[in-house]
Image 1: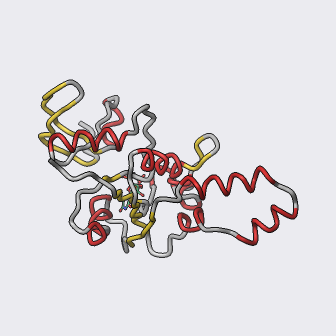
Image 2: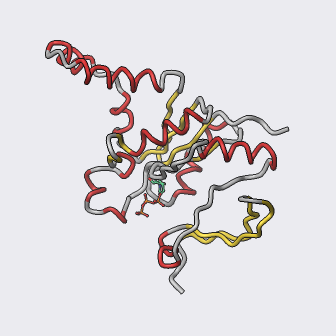
Image 3: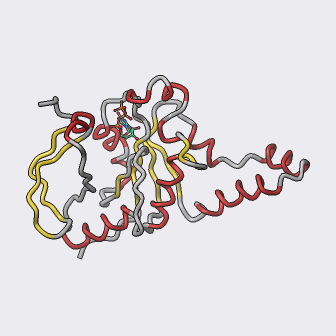
Length: 199
Ligand code: UTP
């Protein structure tokens, strides 16, 4: 029987070249999607999947995530004074939503790719199996994607990836796999190529 998974690594230290020049000023994980930043959807999925510890991989000096979750007493005082109850409630709701989850950070000194980013967090995992969620990947699903992956992991006790079908012209912008079907919605990965040359 495999262990349950309680930790997730979320790398957010990439260059975001596909969204330049915007990503120079706003990191991809903070792009707004309707009324929330992308990272909040990801953290909601993490929470619904029963994860208790989040390890972010950040670039040197990257503070936006800490700032997003940091309590801001001065701002709260001002909002009380101005009777901005709705805004205060938004801040309280965010705090309550992630109350039972601990956040820690690993620094990636140079953006050498997402695999390298994960290795920077390895020390903090104590050799336990962990989930990985990319800071720019929102999955809309009734059962949270991480919970689905954890369930598959418990049955096969091997690394499990979520796959997505793409039109051929988009393949060079993604990591792609060669697979063998083993059950409904379950494939054995035979080969992975990161952002292959167009052919
Ligand atoms: P991507 O593969 O989308 O790379 O990263 P990127 O650098 O952000 O974007 P492009 O390809 O240049 O447009 C997937 C996730 O891994 C993180 C990113 O921040 C993103 O959340 N990442 C990527 C790192 O933390 N470090 C890296 O060196 C690369």
